[in-house]
Length: 562
Ligand SMILES: *Cc1c(COP(=O)(O)O)cnc(C)c1O
Ligand SMILES: [Zn+2]
Image (cartoon, rainbow, N blue to C red; front, side, top):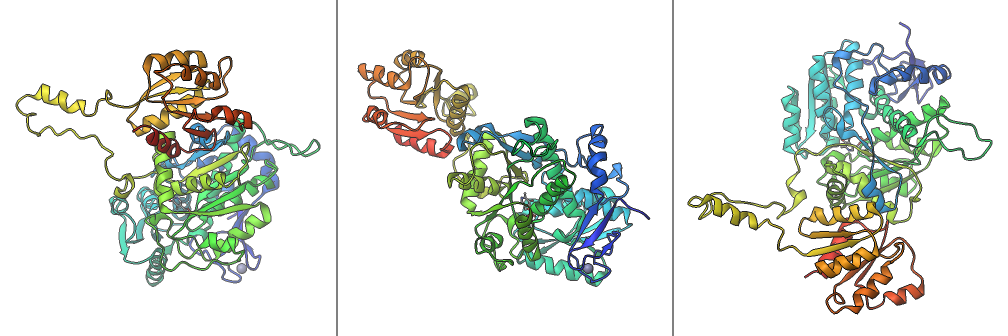
């Protein structure tokens, strides 16, 4: 049967047709192979074909290793939105920060792409039973697609996977095998089980359908960015035109490395088809307690030293031994682009998780938050330029919020059985509600002429919950607002037209009722010595726009309001 693609062995160069049931190279037995398509032809035909198709993973079918896509297996995979992260971008000083929201896949992680293409591929090969090892999300996603395809699935999970995720796997009718040990051990047991029974085994990042599935993240990002920002900017006047847009950076939290491997392949295929001029720089983020790739990259090693026992609560990212995937990823990065590798602690990831939910309305799982924590760290280290276009993969949704993340004291409780409630319901209820009322909360005035900045600060304070807020958009109305409301604290912008922040401070100094109100100055500019002199003695705190996180501001506010 002729096909629209062929697989090439990375070890001996042998080219052969693809059969999902026999993944090894027919010449040398290597499992490391890559799919190749007719890029010269697709360079002309693809843009035309795409024009009339829905925005889902199958719009790229000429570049996917499935011969006859079966609509009956689809759950609406791919086609996730690219969201402008306005608040987070403002905090980090990045005006072009975009979130590829992979939580919006059918089982709420980017593994849905992998599962959709893999299950389609083995279904058309007539395979009816399979084995996979997983840190959680692969098993959930494969389970859903296997259920649709009528394929029996054995999922080998490490016992570190949260119980709620295990149950999610089981509800689809998957055979769950829990391994008390590491993910790498679970992989070995799964392999042996499949070998003994002669079952199809998912080979992770060596699997052709899986790598090909992850490519589509790159395709979608390029198409979406083109829609938002227009075609790629030329590097020089006589440089060629490219119809699509590449981000400057692609960020992802990494466990086994399948995602970035596929995404780089996707961008370089677009380059081969002359739709793009470059592959983005990669931001590869791992969790500190299991960061074999970060260590290897920083030591400039070709192979990673496996982490025997990962120390992290974030089981999704607990691949201790990335094997040859790291070597391959490193080679691709060196050949096609460049990268930053960074690790973050569990704690930093949990903080980023809070931040994303409060500031952008995205509830993500800790593994997804890891890449955001990494981005924050690298921005603060001055490694990302403020005008660069950054796309960050929001890899998965949290379900449910694990207990250790939220900490204590996050809820308001009203006990309807408490004393007094039964006898006098109305009155008791009012009394109970007044405990959650706002009348006792500290009052804060926010003064800034930029609506975006006011919204950001309001959101930061609101998310903490316990402040009454007032806003003024210019110096003149700020002075009268402050005189009238007598807030406990003022958050003040310096650069405003007409009456600026300095003049507001002068006016407040003159009145007895307002001269003692603490002020936090937030400014977008570097101050001159003369300006710093003017501020002396008047303000309690100074923050630079684009260079503070919500918790930094909250800490300041809490210190100043007793
Ligand atoms: C699998 C997974 C990752 C890690 O991705 P790899 O490409 O396999 O390294 C990150 N986040 C989430 C939510 C995942 O499910
Ligand atoms: Zn070979």
